[in-house]
Amino acid sequence: MQTKSLILAALFALFGATSFAQAPAAGASATATCKDGTSYTGVKKGACKGHKGVKSWDTAAAGATGAAAAAPAAATHKASSKTAAMPAAAAPGGGAGKVWVNTSSKTYHCEGDKYYGKTKAGEYMSEADAKAQGDHPSHGKACAGK
Image (tube, rainbow, N blue to C red):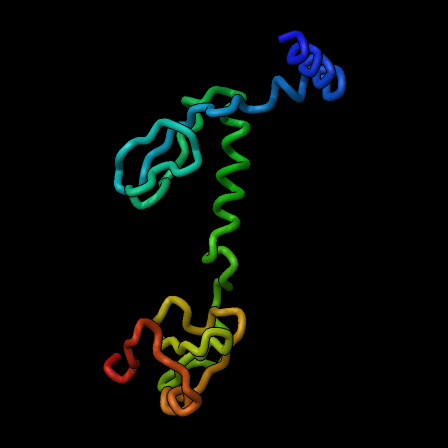
Protein backbone atom coordinates (compact mmCIF):
# COMPACT_ATOMS: atom_id res chain seq x y z
CA MET A 1 0.00 0.00 0.00
CA GLN A 2 2.85 2.36 0.82
CA THR A 3 4.48 1.66 -2.55
CA LYS A 4 1.25 2.57 -4.32
CA SER A 5 1.12 5.90 -2.48
CA LEU A 6 4.73 6.65 -3.38
CA ILE A 7 4.06 5.90 -7.06
CA LEU A 8 0.98 8.14 -7.07
CA ALA A 9 2.91 10.94 -5.36
CA ALA A 10 5.71 10.64 -7.92
CA LEU A 11 3.25 10.76 -10.81
CA PHE A 12 1.48 13.71 -9.24
CA ALA A 13 4.78 15.56 -8.94
CA LEU A 14 5.84 14.63 -12.48
CA PHE A 15 2.62 15.53 -14.32
CA GLY A 16 1.06 18.06 -11.95
CA ALA A 17 -2.43 18.30 -10.55
CA THR A 18 -4.13 19.62 -13.69
CA SER A 19 -3.39 16.61 -15.88
CA PHE A 20 -5.00 14.26 -13.35
CA ALA A 21 -8.00 16.51 -12.86
CA GLN A 22 -8.69 16.67 -16.61
CA ALA A 23 -8.23 12.97 -17.35
CA PRO A 24 -11.52 11.07 -17.62
CA ALA A 25 -12.00 8.38 -15.02
CA ALA A 26 -11.52 4.81 -16.19
CA GLY A 27 -14.92 3.27 -16.93
CA ALA A 28 -16.55 6.71 -17.01
CA SER A 29 -20.18 6.63 -18.06
CA ALA A 30 -21.44 8.14 -21.33
CA THR A 31 -24.99 8.70 -22.54
CA ALA A 32 -26.02 8.38 -26.18
CA THR A 33 -29.01 7.99 -28.47
CA CYS A 34 -28.77 4.99 -30.79
CA LYS A 35 -29.74 5.14 -34.48
CA ASP A 36 -32.79 2.95 -33.81
CA GLY A 37 -34.05 5.48 -31.23
CA THR A 38 -33.10 3.64 -28.03
CA SER A 39 -30.98 5.33 -25.37
CA TYR A 40 -27.65 4.01 -24.08
CA THR A 41 -25.71 4.64 -20.86
CA GLY A 42 -22.32 3.05 -20.29
CA VAL A 43 -18.77 3.18 -21.62
CA LYS A 44 -18.26 4.60 -25.12
CA LYS A 45 -16.53 1.53 -26.53
CA GLY A 46 -19.21 -0.69 -28.05
CA ALA A 47 -21.98 1.83 -27.45
CA CYS A 48 -25.25 1.00 -29.24
CA LYS A 49 -23.90 -2.32 -30.50
CA GLY A 50 -26.82 -4.16 -32.02
CA HIS A 51 -28.78 -0.91 -32.36
CA LYS A 52 -27.29 0.28 -35.68
CA GLY A 53 -24.64 2.48 -33.98
CA VAL A 54 -24.61 5.85 -32.21
CA LYS A 55 -26.83 8.63 -33.57
CA SER A 56 -25.64 11.28 -31.09
CA TRP A 57 -23.81 11.64 -27.78
CA ASP A 58 -25.66 13.37 -24.95
CA THR A 59 -23.08 15.89 -23.76
CA ALA A 60 -25.46 17.71 -21.37
CA ALA A 61 -25.62 14.74 -19.00
CA ALA A 62 -21.85 14.42 -18.93
CA GLY A 63 -21.28 17.80 -17.25
CA ALA A 64 -18.70 20.43 -18.16
CA THR A 65 -15.58 18.23 -18.07
CA GLY A 66 -17.35 15.25 -19.65
CA ALA A 67 -18.71 17.40 -22.46
CA ALA A 68 -15.27 18.79 -23.23
CA ALA A 69 -13.85 15.28 -23.35
CA ALA A 70 -16.76 13.84 -25.38
CA ALA A 71 -16.77 16.46 -28.16
CA PRO A 72 -13.27 15.73 -29.54
CA ALA A 73 -13.86 11.99 -29.34
CA ALA A 74 -17.07 12.24 -31.37
CA ALA A 75 -15.39 14.47 -33.97
CA THR A 76 -12.49 12.03 -34.29
CA HIS A 77 -14.87 9.12 -34.81
CA LYS A 78 -16.68 10.89 -37.64
CA ALA A 79 -13.41 11.90 -39.32
CA SER A 80 -12.23 8.30 -39.43
CA SER A 81 -15.33 7.12 -41.25
CA LYS A 82 -14.78 5.67 -44.72
CA THR A 83 -17.37 7.97 -46.27
CA ALA A 84 -15.57 11.04 -44.90
CA ALA A 85 -12.57 10.26 -47.14
CA MET A 86 -14.78 9.97 -50.24
CA PRO A 87 -14.86 13.06 -52.49
CA ALA A 88 -18.11 15.03 -52.40
CA ALA A 89 -18.38 15.51 -56.18
CA ALA A 90 -18.00 12.88 -58.87
CA ALA A 91 -14.98 12.94 -61.16
CA PRO A 92 -15.66 14.78 -64.42
CA GLY A 93 -16.29 12.81 -67.60
CA GLY A 94 -19.10 10.43 -66.71
CA GLY A 95 -22.49 10.28 -68.28
CA ALA A 96 -25.02 8.18 -70.10
CA GLY A 97 -23.86 4.69 -70.93
CA LYS A 98 -20.65 4.90 -68.87
CA VAL A 99 -19.73 3.12 -65.67
CA TRP A 100 -17.10 4.10 -63.11
CA VAL A 101 -14.51 1.37 -62.62
CA ASN A 102 -12.72 1.34 -59.27
CA THR A 103 -9.31 0.24 -60.55
CA SER A 104 -8.21 -0.87 -57.05
CA SER A 105 -11.04 -3.33 -56.46
CA LYS A 106 -11.92 -4.10 -60.14
CA THR A 107 -15.56 -3.22 -59.33
CA TYR A 108 -17.68 -1.00 -61.56
CA HIS A 109 -20.46 1.32 -60.43
CA CYS A 110 -23.48 2.42 -62.46
CA GLU A 111 -24.63 6.01 -62.89
CA GLY A 112 -26.61 7.03 -59.80
CA ASP A 113 -24.63 4.68 -57.54
CA LYS A 114 -23.22 6.14 -54.31
CA TYR A 115 -19.63 5.54 -55.49
CA TYR A 116 -20.07 6.56 -59.15
CA GLY A 117 -17.00 8.69 -59.94
CA LYS A 118 -16.04 8.97 -56.26
CA THR A 119 -13.51 6.25 -55.45
CA LYS A 120 -9.86 7.24 -55.03
CA ALA A 121 -8.67 5.40 -58.13
CA GLY A 122 -10.85 4.80 -61.14
CA GLU A 123 -11.94 5.65 -64.66
CA TYR A 124 -15.08 5.93 -66.81
CA MET A 125 -15.75 3.44 -69.62
CA SER A 126 -18.60 1.50 -71.18
CA GLU A 127 -20.00 -1.42 -69.23
CA ALA A 128 -18.96 -3.78 -72.05
CA ASP A 129 -15.34 -2.57 -71.83
CA ALA A 130 -15.38 -3.00 -68.04
CA LYS A 131 -16.63 -6.59 -68.39
CA ALA A 132 -14.03 -7.29 -71.10
CA GLN A 133 -11.29 -6.20 -68.68
CA GLY A 134 -12.60 -8.61 -66.06
CA ASP A 135 -14.24 -6.00 -63.82
CA HIS A 136 -17.36 -7.03 -61.92
CA PRO A 137 -20.51 -5.03 -61.10
CA SER A 138 -21.06 -3.58 -57.64
CA HIS A 139 -23.19 -5.94 -55.52
CA GLY A 140 -23.45 -8.26 -58.56
CA LYS A 141 -26.00 -6.02 -60.33
CA ALA A 142 -25.33 -5.04 -63.93
CA CYS A 143 -26.33 -1.55 -65.13
CA ALA A 144 -28.31 -2.56 -68.22
CA GLY A 145 -31.67 -2.47 -66.40
CA LYS A 146 -31.13 0.99 -64.87
